[in-house]
Length: 206
Image (cartoon, rainbow, N blue to C red):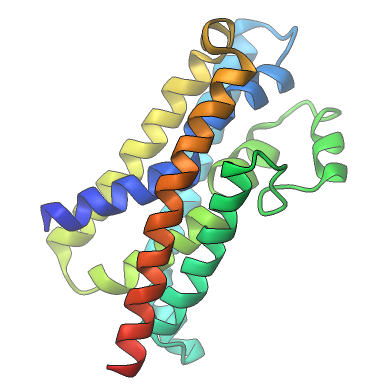
């Protein structure tokens, strides 16, 4: 159980990429008051956590209703995560999070907590796919499911800490430092994504 939760934490943490939120949040809140920055950080993480919990409770039933085997979703989810890892490693702008028009719109919004912070930057497609992958395995196991939610809460708390400290962290590590850390995380995510695909293939044919 502990090993499974640690694995989920690593995958979920890497997919959410709290470090990548530093330049994003600093740019979106540039010139804003500290009070506004704190309010956006707390609100965004709370909403993102709510979205993740909703998917955690509804993920397994959704797959059952759609007639999708967990092994099949593992292959699809692993492929999505692998594509995200390539974007991280090669430092490309991620189309799995937001498009350029969406980014331009976010710069003109007063409240950036729901869009683009909570979705799609924190609780994005990759994060939700990861939750769906894991929720199928922990469904019907109360203790494991509670640990599963605790891991989600822990990663959301890490995002909150990063957002609150974004202006100071940006001054320390800069954009280059954030990109280097994201590239290293991308390598780890690529290996974990391949493992998801292998497990899915094994479950489908063995």
